[in-house]
Amino acid sequence: MDNQVREEILKRFVDSGERERLYEIVKAKLNARGWQDHVRNHCKEVLKNKDIKTVTVDELCEDVLPYAKNSVSDDVKVETMEQIKSFLNKTLSEVTKE
Image 1 (cartoon, rainbow, N blue to C red):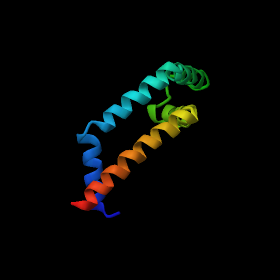
Image 2 (image 1 turned 30 degrees about the vertical axis):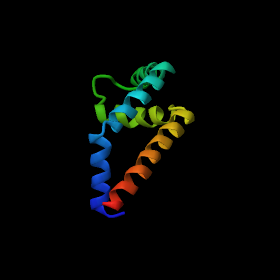
Image 3 (image 1 turned 120 degrees about the vertical axis):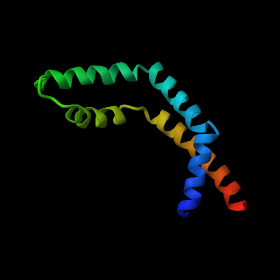
């Protein structure tokens, strides 16, 4: 896939509202599962083990992001990827016809 096609698909993903729609769905699913609370609690644990006066945002992110990503349930990941693939397949066929 060349860059022009990639850029057009990304533009349509955003302009169509599909990106925002998927974002809201994922956010609702994560909230329903208490994901944000789990990540917040993990942040607190990380901060307990660090000097809060000297810890940087980058250091906190380095510790928390892998945990946050890994704690997203597989069903949320799979369903989201299926929806993205569906959008990509549909849009790719439209873009390549033009």
